[in-house]
Image 1 (cartoon, one colour):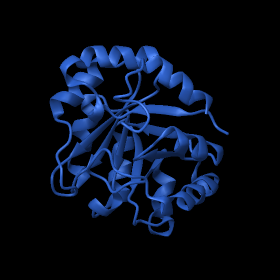
Image 2 (tube, one colour):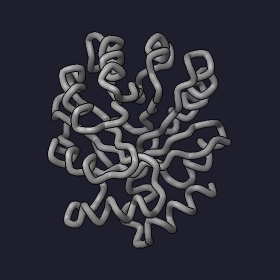
Image 3 (cartoon, one colour):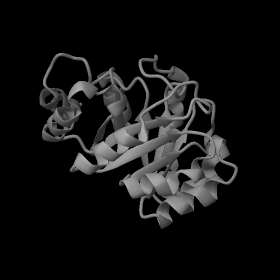
Length: 218
């Protein structure tokens, strides 16, 4: 079992008191803030705005990632890197030249990463893995919070974990319906990072610190 990276999805945070949310989450011991960017085209929804990204990156004391659920993500890499994103995820399906975009992310000083849709196989993206520091598997279809975990994805986690040593040692992450039960199951097979939304962290009526401590024990 590997040490966990616990990453709150800030799309689920309370924006009426965002400064307090950031402070409370950091004091709870989270590792990375996860920011969802959507364009209404690659996914049928709109996510966080540039002002949200700028505010969080300026006030955060831990790394911030951005998950670009957008068409042609290479057009926006420099912008988000300049805003302070430490990790930039792209969807290979949304980019004509994903290898070039991943190299652009590294050249901008951020960690290159890809997000894998439920219908995308290991074989489809394996040549990109040499360029990635993180690989995030979607266990729901991207674009909306609160969806149910897709059980057919579970074997794919093991495939990406088992192959990591052959492609430079990327870290495997999960995004979507990431409940405590799924964290316990997937951490045992080597998944390292967990994007935390309403299934495990937000809206529970408990202090974040208590929840994070419990998740670390799983």
